[in-house]
Amino acid sequence: MKNFKKLALMGLTAVMSLSLLAGCGGGNAGNAETPSGNSNTPSVESNTPAATGEFTTVEEGKLHMSTNAAFPPYEMTTDDGGFEGIDVEVAQAIAEKLGLELVVDDMGFDAALTAVQTGQSDIAMAGITVTDERLEVMDFSDSYATGVQVVIVKEDSPIQTIDDLANADMIGCQTATTGYIYCSDTPENGGYGEDHVTAYENGALAVMALVNGQVDAVVIDNEPAKSFVAQNEGLKILDTEFAVEDYAIAFAKGNTALKDAVNTALSELIADGTVQSIVDKYITAE
Ligand code: ARG
Image (cartoon, rainbow, N blue to C red; front, side, top):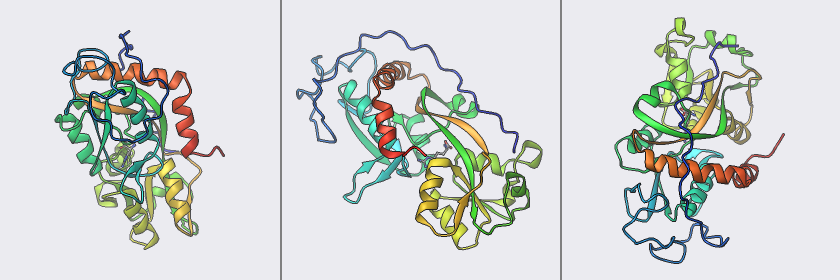
């Protein structure tokens, strides 16, 4: 097993006690369009940002979430052009608590990270792993899920353990992800060198390259891996885990007011079981 340590969740400040505005009375607003100022919006003056009176959002009354909706079961598109998944529903529940309407902005994974750093979106939520490098350029909420980097190979592959990965001619990863970052690192740092890694726009394309024999293995997060393996014949996930990580919601660096409000909402949604019930809807326990 590779010696990637568990990535510690760092830099999380204590949740401040905020005068949180109660959400509406139990109605399920779903994805319905909720024009600002309707009954789902807490009764604050329309120009006052919700919940803390401190944060502002890109667009008044809305919570823009940048994501890469090609990462099942965290975020994916629906047949009718909408979005679903664990991140989408947790963000929806957070937005409701803050009296905001969730708007999902779908783009490449690296673009989703850039969008939140540059203030194009309010939050980025995309199964994003907290890393020291990312903490230098963005802030993170408390963690809401654990991700594990795993290795997908063909069933008859000579690569049967993580150690065998060193013999792979080519490893496929998704652009800008931790899987790519680890694998493309130098061998001294536990990687395989850039020459042995190909970055694909999304995980499905990396898996297609594996099926077609263009790469020998794919390193990607475990839940998307399960989904891609289920969709393709003849693939399997190696038993050993490559790295264990924490997922969190990203904010622009210094956007503490929004981060605090989101952390408060998130901790309530964890405490009352909402987050777990969303996870259970998308991930069946083995
Ligand atoms: N957890 C990995 C990372 O943060 C991969 C996330 C990819 N997410 C996505 N929606 N494509 O780098």
